[in-house]
Amino acid sequence: MVSYYKTVANRLIEVDSLMPGCWISVVDPTAQERKMLIDDYGLDSDFLKSSLDEEESSRVEQEENQTLIIVDTAVSEVQKDDTLIFYTMPLGIILTDHYVFTISLRENKVINDVVSGRVRNIQTQFRTQFVLRLMMNITASFLVYLKQIDKTSSAMQRKLHGAMKNHELIQMLELEKSLIYFSTSLKSNDVTMNKILLNKIMRGKFIKLYEEDQDLLEDVLIELKQAQEMASIYSGILSGVVDAFGSVISNNLNIVMWRLTMVTIILAIPTMVYSFYGMNTLDLPFAEHTWFPTLLSLLLTAIVAFVLFKYKKK
Image (tube, rainbow, N blue to C red; front, side, top):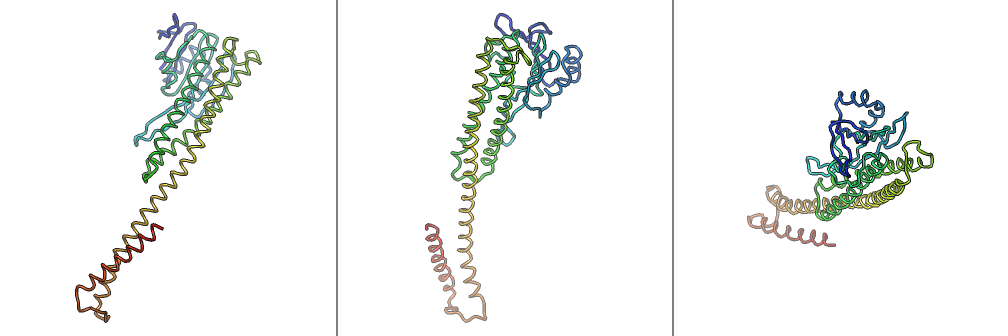
């Protein structure tokens, strides 16, 4: 799907066709739309292909009069078993002489936020500022998801005591994996943004950076550093919690096995007593009294149960 947007009177509106100073949002384009982007709008085919590659890493590069910026965006999803997972998805930003294209393989929350007006001060005609505002929103979404991961982790920790189900453990492992993805993506985005910062010194090798955009770029870099630090801290905490979680589950399983063992031993005593008294070849005391095996079984069972429970308390 290809959509066109332009800022008019400080409001972002959707327009019917391509016009100067507009932003083109491309989401999961069809083969016909891809051909139109290459043939009619002159996008580099390799840039378009890279933007739609789920495994593409964050980077910035230039080809003739076009600049490609690929950044990782944060995504959350609830699976069928109610497990909450987080992962990253690349977003391609292509700048031409007059337009800004954003390209993604699937619906993207960052783009939806811009379209719905939740991101302020969007000016599509100022391409560099638009890209930086987009980067700020991408970084902010990482921070939101990191806080959500921390909140989910805390909720799982409260369920540690008495937990023996796989769901809690799977959820914690998914959160730990998500933090690894986030940490890697944030570092890559940081490298990409630093290249844009270096671009100022290199006098516009990638994109033209104006003086008024400098503060915005520095804010983005600060937010990226903060997100990296949060991801690192949460990852360390979660790693320790997962280890503790596994120990708790193992300990709870040992307790259950101990109880089952005690029950098995206690139930085996009457069986053994009646087995001995059921043998005609053995000359056992009080064999002529039918009540004696029952009394002996109860007495031995009580003694063994007392000894086992006394040992367990120690």
